[in-house]
Length: 352
Image 1 (tube, rainbow, N blue to C red):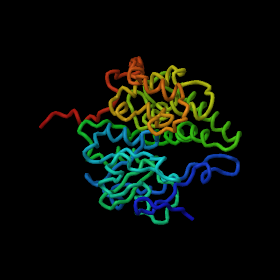
Image 2: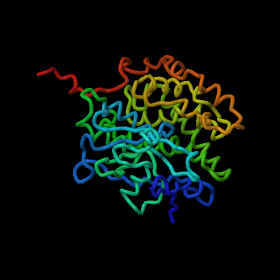
Image 3: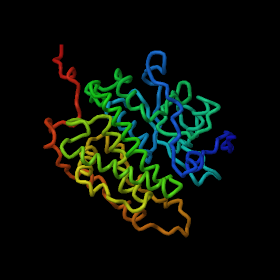
Image 4: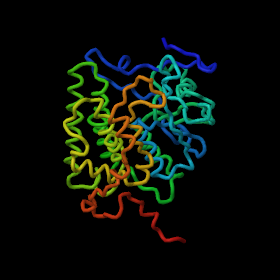
């Protein structure tokens, strides 16, 4: 039975804990399935401007995919966005994502304080975690999609009428089957493998996930030896998915999975590849290294808190932008070195 806490007259469900509700008897972490997976278009959620808001979190790479894609495609005028967070110190038990960047923590479009409220509105019987990305219909005040597996694809295909005129083709029709296959492989071997290591509750579960993760990185390092991006000369949906894990590797994941076989900077191809992507505005606009690495909020820390020299002193004074904008030197791998994004041919048609 779900547990509730009253906050400002609202009954808010206590957030389930992954290491309790999503771990099997052998200590393996199994990420909860996405609950709101209805797509967009005819007979499904309507494709409209000024109807949806994307909620995402700086530290969450699953949601970071959608924020990058939204900007790459120029959907800012069609789909609103808000970054959510946690106010851990304010409540006796964890209540999940809160609209901490809205005035008085109340999202103006929906009137909600916590993301979970919009989950209850969509399904009063839902008892899982309220996750990001969450695509919310603010006319109906409810979540309509939290499917991080497919959400970027919906933005790329179904929301095409609202994309900017020179939006890149991130999900080319002729490559979709291959992209889908690689995306699932990335989920199993890279994106989620690192979390399976972090949330493992047995030595064997940790070892299996740890080895899977580094084998996945090794495979991607080899794939990128002779090509600029995962499918050749241009960025695709798959590159966004690999990037968000790489961006968090050295400053966040590495401290959660123990001594690493290698750091990102030790992978010649992956390190150059990640910098190559970062230098695209939509990537660096949506990448927050200091938030990825944050140890604690020092303004709220206990007076007896012992600062971590690296995370609380070195990280805040590090110029990540300068480091990540160091030239990647991967242009020679492309037949179109001046362009990282493929613009559809019809954009270049002469004006009538």
